[in-house]
Amino acid sequence: MLVAEELLKRYKQEHIIKFLENNPKLEEQILSFDFDTIINLYNSVKNRKNLEASIIEHMPYTNKEKLSEKETKELEDIGEKIIKQNKYAVITMAGGQGTRLGHTGPKGTYKINTVNGPKYLFEIIIDELKKAQEKYGTTIMWYIMTSKENNDETENFLKIHNFFGYPSDKVKFFKQGEMPLISDDGKLLINEHKIIKEASDGNGSIYASLDRDGILEDMRKREIEWIFIGGVDNVLLKFIDPLLTGLTIEEGNIIASKSIIKRDAYEKVGVFCKVNGRPKVIEYTETPKDLAEEVDENGDFVYGDTNIISHLFNIKALEKIANKNMPYHVAHKKAEYLDESGNLIKPDTPNAYKFESFIFDAFEEFEDMTLLRVKRENEFAPIKNKEGNDSPETATKLYNNFMKRNLI
Ligand code: UTP
Image 1 (spheres, rainbow, N blue to C red):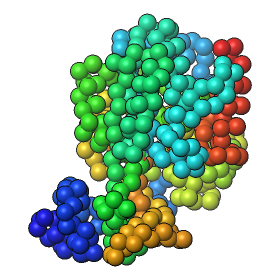
Image 2 (cartoon, rainbow, N blue to C red; image 1 turned 180 degrees about the vertical axis):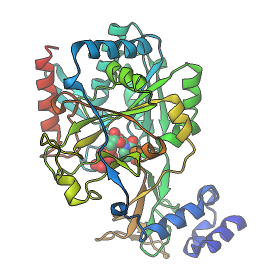
Image 3 (cartoon, helix red, strand yellow; image 1 turned 90 degrees about the vertical axis):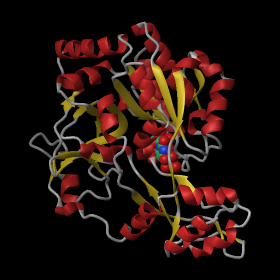
């Protein structure tokens, strides 16, 4: 108890001391924290890096539609070999809170009405894995990243549904990290269970989690070399992609992404570019206006390749970044907490900082990456919002149109 108390004093968190009495969970939590990192993050909120001072350049890409049949076939052959040799795995990131959709339960348990009947998002992913089983004569390992909050519900859901017919020994779960929330005046918050309030720390914690939960080790044992990582909520995500794999190998890279062209100069998306010579995704909020609008001699956006969370990594790349500190992005949020008298406070305005790292922030650890531009209508149908853009309605339409076009 004393050590925990000392830590709280050292880091000016004395308001928590009174909650320590008969509270071993809180003590354990305090001892597990990296206070220096947390306090440094809070201090850095007001000192954000200015991107405009960096050298921003266009990132070269390959347009899938412009490859000849022969080129496509040659690259696909390279990728297919990898898949058939069991050297390819898929990770679905399903640790998000899905706050905009507002579905109770993990997003993968959301159901849409497809031309092939009602289907859960997890089921749609399994359909693709099963198709690959037939096509390549191999069963691809499927890893699912959950959060502390949704792990049990996710595992139970898939067990109850018997993994929709996919072999359960080819499915493994692992949990992403969490970070404490911190108030406007630099104080950790106490939640209704009298422990420090934490939240998922963004999909960038995947790298450390893969190592911590033994997934990298599992991949090494299975001799997996190429790992696709994508989100749970894009129902047209093509996560088994021999072309992308072949192209990445041909280009001698160990990381790759797929992109689609942005709809207009100001679409609220992150775009690929090179910053100080290194690959990066810059958010629309960080993109200077002239760059957002810039077009080349053909009238194409120079900074138009949108990130659709469709990434490929060689295991060497995941090993390289497993222990790298990821930069955190900060969001100002409303967060309930217990005050010093133990009353639950429900703020009307944002009162706390939430720190999240993003998977794409690791790209700048590499000198180069492969970028494959694909067609929006073939690979992008996200479910983010309850209604309007990127909603179940728009995604279902796109999914059904794709299925009809491909006569599946
Ligand atoms: P989003 O950034 O769209 O977040 O996630 P979200 O949680 O699904 O939705 P909102 O913002 O709360 O409405 C993109 C992908 O990254 C995963 C999500 O599950 C989704 O597949 N993700 C996001 C994580 O795995 N962990 C996180 O902490 C955040």
